[in-house]
Length: 316
Figure 1 (cartoon, rainbow, N blue to C red):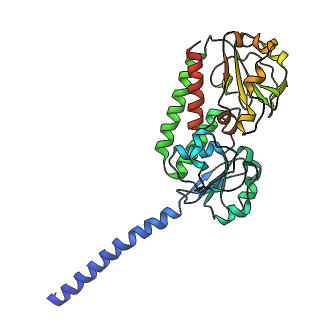
Figure 2 (figure 1 turned 90 degrees about the horizontal axis):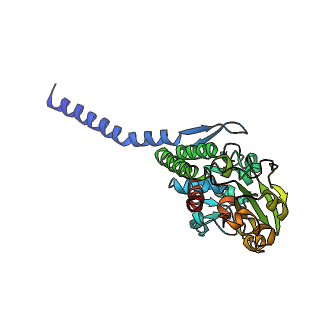
Figure 3 (figure 1 turned 90 degrees about the vertical axis):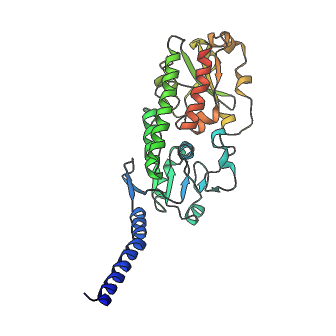
């Protein structure tokens, strides 16, 4: 081969190599853009993009999961006051996309989301939201709250490409739970009550707040409490008759930022003060926003709530 011919071949080879270097990243980028994750949920399978750019979140427990995974979100619901673990989302940097229950569809459409995360209070809107973008329904299964929380954390970890962090968070959550369970044995039975505008309701095993008994191992002082979304309406006499060793109190007014008689003031009466819980100083006022708004089903809320209970049972 002549010198001229060899030179032409070398230039062609150089151009081909350069071409490969230039086009490979584009090819890889195109492949990544096409990656999706199929999630099985009650309304049928949904395909969501991996590493989505624009994420809108209506469910606060899911928002806490995404925060813990280090994921950026664009839109969050309007709430009177964000729970402490989610205070960063009170910033105006995050677009308000509706309430916990009712999306602002025009705002949602305008943001052109790659994925929407709903669940719980917004679960009824999943079908309508899915017309705009792939929508996850991460409603917690109260019959299996921990398994449900772990499942959601795993899905979100895979979605944002941080599965390792999801595994780390699940291990930490399980360690917290195991530590608490080690303290609740033989420390007496408990009753969970919620105060709401001066009214009382009780929650037992299998309910939305049944984790106290079903997961944390605290025996139920009353095993016959009706399982209902708003609990079983009760009286102060019911609390005295049940006579728990522990009384766990959720102040709904405080959780939703509504002014009213505080739970502590409401429960400071002769009937409640005559219970074993009051005499032993074992009335625990729970972190209302964590329990009521986040369902105690995300890394930050569960850690804070379990830590409070660990501190209480460590003194018993």
